[in-house]
Image (cartoon, rainbow, N blue to C red):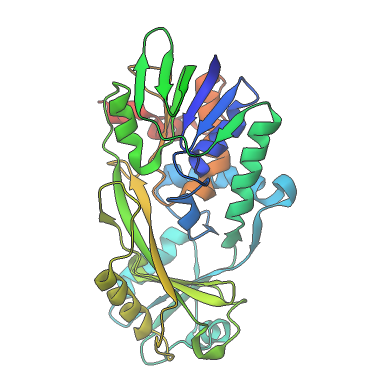
Length: 357
């Protein structure tokens, strides 16, 4: 008998599994051949504590110490540069306020990214504390922690049936029996709930496209900050000597192994090109990932109010890695009846009860 059976081997499932593994036996079921395949493996991998709605920010801030110190730390310097055009003054200042940035001159911005276009960039702001996350190592370390506590992390285990009598029974190539069922299935979270006879909560998967470009103009981009267009209209981030550019799209789609939309990607690349002096001459590769949102765009964490042995870890919406340490701890606290460290109003804003009213 398993104490906590977790469906989903992305950052949501592995982080909560690691926290629960000190309270009982844990088994994680991942449908794909590898962990973190769909959303977690296609993350922008940035830790920006001020990014998101207040409950998300609260989780990120509560996760900061873990990111900085656990297992030698997962963060490395990056920085975030916000840029906008002459007609974006109001939106620019709103972003500066929301992200806790400070405005800088064009010359200061171009000292950080030398390809900025002086004819297009009218406003710039910077936040030094934005940092890269070693996402792959974090996934593997959470999986290792589960295994070190006698848990299992199993791949190629697609769930095909869920029933509940006295205990949960889950068919995934073989039958698993568990006291608690944890739904960390990402874009498939509502489908898993319905399979289990639990009312869905309105999770919407959204596509996020990405292109990898050669380093613009042959520059060494390794020390460049991440660039963000006003209103999150696009972003660009150095990666292994290349530049990743995204249109920051969030188009609703059915849950599937998503791919980039060529037209959406082209429009995003055009928005990026407007602000730089080096044209896009070649796209080396492109892909897309799924960001899944609850109706109020806030994570859903904790036992279902109608069936407490069914636990939601869903709606990460692109904030999964930066919130994972505190989110995993919060779910473990709620499941075991431990008083959470987060403020009560933030906990209430994250629990699934809010979506059942």
